[in-house]
Amino acid sequence: MNKEEFIRENCPDRHGTNCSKWDILPTKYGDPDLISMWVADMDFKAPREVTEALRKKVDFGIYGYSLTPDSYYQSFIQWEKEQHGWEIQRDWIRFAPGVVTGIFWCMHMLTKPGDAAIINMPVYYPFHHAIEDIDRRLIYSELVNTGGIYTIDFEDFEKKVVDNEVKVFILCSPHNPVGRVWTEDELRRLLEICKKHHVTVISDEIHHDLIIGKHPHIPTASIDGGKYSDIIITLTAASKTFNLAGMKNSFVIIPGEDLRNQFDRLAVSLHEDTGNMLGYYAIEAAYTYGREWLDTVISIIRDNYEYALNRIQAELPKAILSPLEGTYLAWLDLSGYLGKAEESGMKDFVQEKARLAVDYGQWFGAGGNGFIRLNLATSPEWVEKAIDGLVKASQS
Ligand SMILES: Cc1ncc(COP(=O)(O)O)c(C=O)c1O
Image (cartoon, rainbow, N blue to C red; front, side, top):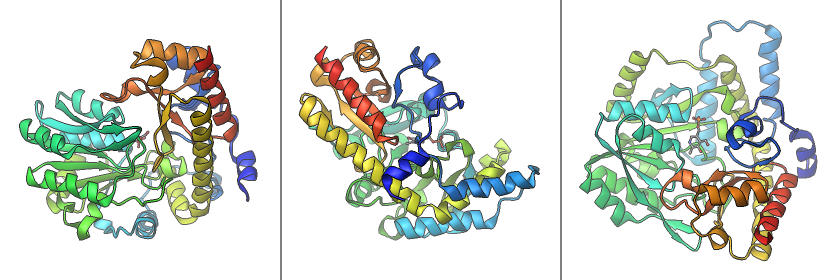
């Protein structure tokens, strides 16, 4: 199937289906008619084999207590090996319903109130909540933005770790919202600092299959043959890769025995160790049959990005679109038009004039003011309308 056919068949109107992406617009943005470019959720139907697997279960019609099929784990292990060269042992894998839930669990497990955890800002805002909402101290090292290209200030990161006796680093790899796929060297330098100062790393790799640029994702725990894996808890899922967030099944991967034992004690105390039964079948089908689907989707995202980039460079010359190495979330600096506008100023430009619902940069913390994040995992038609809106807003 070519891309045009794929989009025609797999990109339905989602209004009125109780999807967060579109149906939350009246309550979240106060306007049902905006173009929804916020939350990281694709407008594409999942691979056909996923729906077929679910249909088989639905046709059987019994949804009782279930065992987790071993083939579910094997499909994930195989996928990680083939796509990322990461050899995961079955015994390392644990369950969390969602990656964010898993981060909260690990924060409870690894820290006590008053302890410090570090993040690289701007970053996916639930990371802030996983620290502040449970009375831990949020320490951040701001990423360095050079003309839209982001890098890590390692000296600042290490100083913050030491000065604040940081216990945990929550890493976003690939990074939402700035679109970086961290290189092996960058990751190694972060891990060296963490190891040296006894910092445990919660590595959120949920976007790891969505590689848009030229260099691959490196699973943090696989670096140097697993040299740092005893300090790392990796969280990932099929939810971003195959648009299955509603299935509520994620993977917690813990190669280190000490951390694994701690997690097992936590799981006992939470009484929460199995996932959604339908999710198991959906996810296994996605990992087993979904590679071609994913190639097509990545190619559409790449086209959408190229289209947006070309038009922004030509028609919004004061805006800067960061390179999209990974994720489907484009990070757009509008400060050339708005300064470092607070959300109210941005809202007038983005919602009233451009008619878009986006994630505002300031939600992501330091370094985010004046930016918006646009979800490009949608049909080219919406991307075209979104850019039309931004261009119009810049001219009014
Ligand atoms: C970096 C990152 N982690 C986690 C999530 C959400 O994961 P879950 O729905 O499994 O909690 C997202 C969703 O946007 C994300 O971007």
